[in-house]
Image 1 (cartoon, helix red, strand yellow):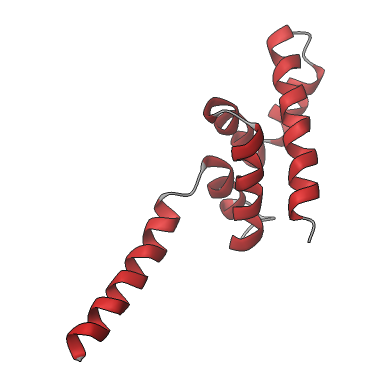
Image 2 (cartoon, rainbow, N blue to C red):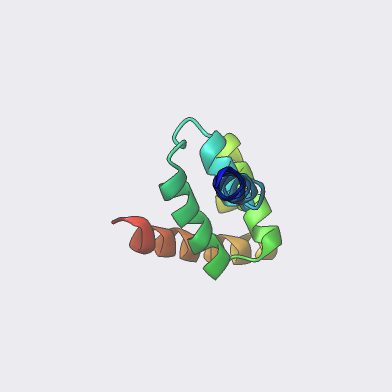
Length: 102
């Protein structure tokens, strides 16, 4: 009986730890930010990112949590690639708002 209980506790602990390890860049940045810390909300925002942004876009957007000035610089940029990224980023924001506003 003790071995079954131990195996169950170990499996649950491993699942919880692997969930943190498997968190995407948006979720990790959200959790680390001064506005974050809500695992449920940050996980939901990551799900919206998974639906709308590529991995590279997610890594780029995650930097905005630490450096909001980078977001502003991207927004005012005259670069076509920045404009295209910003359109995808806005779509992500709208999706996250609709999906996570619960």
